[in-house]
Length: 115
Image (cartoon, rainbow, N blue to C red; front, top):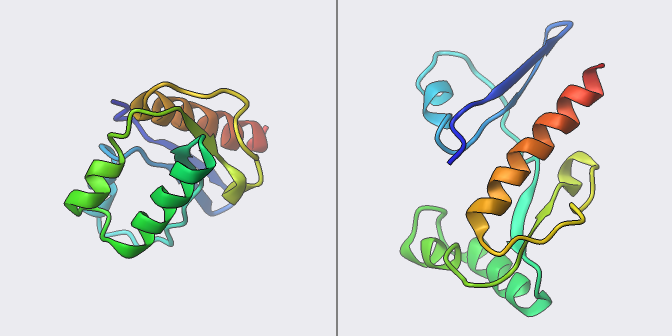
């Protein structure tokens, strides 16, 4: 599981790519920040993806149903459209591998944007 976070500071603006494990470091700090989703890891299959999205809208992120939906044995994809980067062209056989690729792709996206 990814634990690191990437922070880019540019002219007073700060972009942080947080992993789930690294969030506690920043949530415990006294800084205020606007948090926006940069990407989604969702099933490739359209029916499963729709079911996954409906479940995630109806239940809390820390609910048992949400946790169950993360364990589905299906192919997963990374959708980075919230930051304008589209869907990664690779599918993953488990969700954790997709999340690891998501973090790497987001780091590359934001670091590449700053160069």
